[in-house]
Length: 142
Length: 407
Image 1: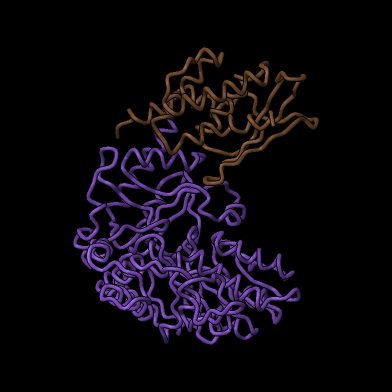
Image 2 (image 1 turned 90 degrees about the vertical axis):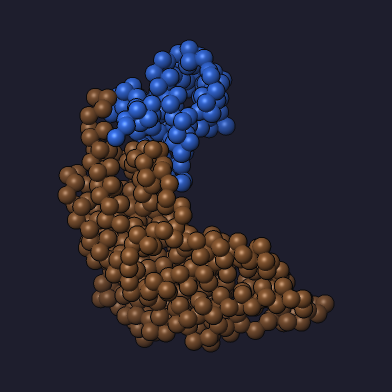
């Protein structure tokens, strides 16, 4: 079996976020919660935010999904924590571009790990897994 | 049945995917198409294409003959009494919706019950939820046994004299359970209810005799049995269809149209508003010829062997959970350790193996099984034990990959 192709998808850093997710869990108080499903596959993601006016002071996620969707959620929460909502939305836009195979400036995420998800763009069926958490995050501005 | 000869009839199978010979194990989602079907559709468009039931020109009557000829092939295939009982439509979903919207809304009241099971496909749940909401009727579920079957005792318990409709899959698309339709029909009839059978997963694989089953309605899809997508069949007992109102109105289904009222054509055309799916029906006729030439008994025998072999091979894999009963249709739904089914499917895909991953349009059942998604390998007449071997090897590799890589 050639693992070459697979390794472009399942990078070590992705598996690390999958097995050891950052910011996974919930806040005890009733924080702002958004939910997003991928109805074609049953993946679900819940995000909770602590906002200080337009700044994401803290964020946590829970949900069910594959390695790609959960690893992406973990990275997303890391990337947007401490950022303004506007900046987070820009990142989400950038992330979508990356999924379409466009060259993007990874430094804009302030999180190198996200580069590992670039390989997902070669697996069209899995792009929705990677964008789920970002799309959920976008709801916070609505 | 010589499976090598069968495979030669399916051109799509002869290809490499991601550098490996294709192993297609997703026939419950849609089946591959034999040359006979592809050519029937091709020839129709090359030589005969015309609208049916109208005009007097030669092509028009040839197309009508082919279309109506296909209807008679369907009638024979499921042993219906008359072609008046064979309604062409888009597929199983449409068939069930027609019964729900027409028979359901005409006959169900707030005091009545509709009975289904937790193993139903969404297309045999939501139409009944809608009827229950509109009429105020109660939607009831026959409970599932531990092994994913239903017991006739529970059917007798759940179906009462208030029950107007019992709607149930002949074969579960997730568990592979083969439900005892004939016995359930008897219980339904004893209580004055009709039985609606979702035949999407049974018509392609089992010998269907609607008179013997004594089902009132039986809906199935062409594309799961080698026909093109977009063609399906609703069988209904003539005396029931006669009393039902159409749900789509327009061309093809009318007799006389006056300014303020109209009358309907006779069966089955009153349920076929608009230009029908002519090429699809002809393709379905060709698929039925193809399957009948091989013999449904031979196909079933082959599939039973495959199902048994698949259960054996997959049971050997440590950490693999299989859902559903031992006696089952030729499909195996499973989960591998805590590897998400999407990840399983992606790894298998790099090996050229196509399976389905997700909730299989059965979220009620997924909740019952307490999983968010599962993987499913489903087989048809063209699959071989070698396909199962490749799947088993692929799963072992998936396990190794997720066990070893990157930790």
